[in-house]
Image 1 (cartoon, one colour):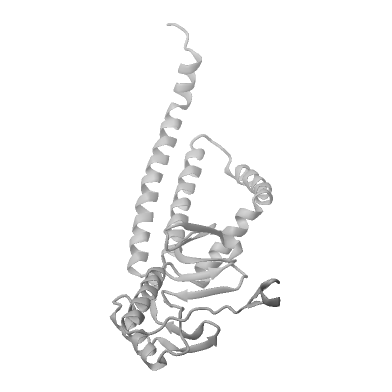
Image 2 (cartoon, one colour):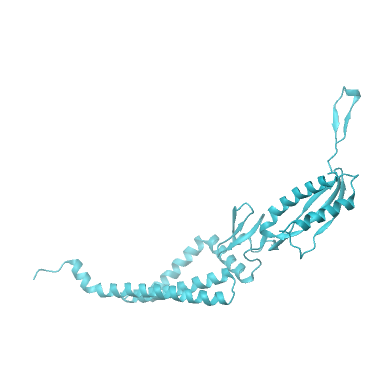
Length: 273
């Protein structure tokens, strides 16, 4: 009988252990996916916030996979306690190296738990603004009206002054009319323009009135409400509709005036104001 090779000897000695470990890992993966899916369905029925739901589902999946991994290592006779201690020591070093990442994760947990804002709301924080598109552990993604995205590290959000506009916004549209224009007629025209726009929220009373008198004429503030996602488009629609309505009703648009003085009969410099 020919002598066995090293490969054959290892296969005979550890073959069943390897097969057992692989079987445990496969079964653990299937169980982790099934348990995570069941937990996700249960949390969805409970109307839990998406960020918290995603976090809990991930934690459950990782815990089940960790148990399967430990069970697979046990098939090879690996001592688990020293391994866990070594992982703990290595984790301390990794923690120091990834302080920024860990601080973002802790801040993400704070955001998910305290809920200072939610997906779909319009916020302004740390010098940026936009509609909240996604909240993850390390970052929060904001989206602008032009569909561009701003990715904000969560540690830049927690502890900062945050302006949450919610899911609706009040527009700030200003238009100037000439000093000789009929103010009541202009206000009525602006009110009609807002009434005709279907994307303005009719259950929120708009702000409409004279806000200032300056060198351009009489300044009128038109402040209706709209959904946060429609704010930029509706604002542009209002400006165009106001101009067309004022022109149709013969309401003079205010024009900034400049005073020019000629010094020394035209021989000197001109002074503009």
